[in-house]
Image 1 (cartoon, rainbow over the protein chains, first blue to last red):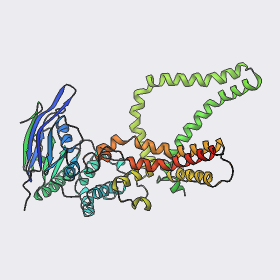
Image 2 (image 1 turned 60 degrees about the vertical axis):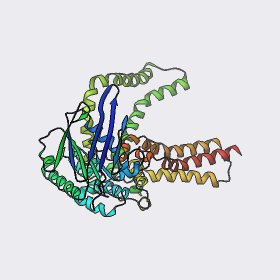
Image 3 (image 1 turned 30 degrees about the vertical axis):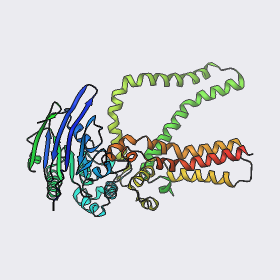
Image 4 (image 1 turned 180 degrees about the vertical axis):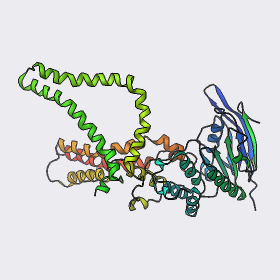
Length: 214
Length: 220
């Protein structure tokens, strides 16, 4: 039986940088199995919105719940239900791709998910190389594979298709589709409503304009 | 032994990371040598002839001139070359496949601490050798029957610094780690790229050795 708790619930989320209001009291609900793509030009707050939901950016006001867990009051359980792909992919020095995948599998207590992530990354023997030596596309593949261990209710993806070749984009769509079938929701952002990759998922498009969603 | 002393680096990597800085240091020493000889001559003879004055001043003035002019003349090009230097370093380093995880790190149950230790093991210079030097220094201070003198305390402090300074440099990368860990279900300090217990654990050997040295020195 599918859980009816919304995968994501935002109420009055506000973020201001000095005297510039980036997010102006945003409300948003994502049901399980739903895909929402937030579109906006550069520098209008998409990554800030996604960072607030992931807990990596501190919001000024408002509440965020992930799978029924408040990000403020129950931060660990909320994050257990969340997988976040940031725009800037950070890999720690001295660690191979396989070791980073194993780290994520261990954090979520899902060693079986490690094998899934290894196969999904399609990085082959490069997984045994230091991740700092990867190209941009390889880092993106690795970061996407890191999202797979564990059972997530919400995927928050900041421009997931940027830097990926066509084949990798199709693989990502396929993986995300499987996660949707499992009852997860996806919130992603981009610049262009004509992104064919995004449209191959059953996505609802919303615009972020002047700090408001429309 | 070389592999162990190299902290997981391959020999070509060791050449880039250890021998190249050593060469730079040797060059700096060589440039400063005429100046040191000139100072020694002043101490011994109380005077310099024109040749010695030139040997003292020319490298010094040249270094100052290069320092002032280089950023203006070559600053932009120098930073543009960084990408090429990185590429050259990668080429010299060979395949970027590090050594396997040491068994004692793979025993760690906490994934964050395991990742921290792996990062320290592979990115700080000769970690096991530095720890061995510290332990040897501590063992000598604890077991020696001779009185601990100030020079012994200085040696203990040096061995402690040798272990601590590269490790503490690691703690400064917390902001980058916060980007990696911020959205994961971890404790608040770990989400911010910090682990106070880990830092305490890393500092304890150095502080214990220095503390023992000071204690034995103070009691004579």
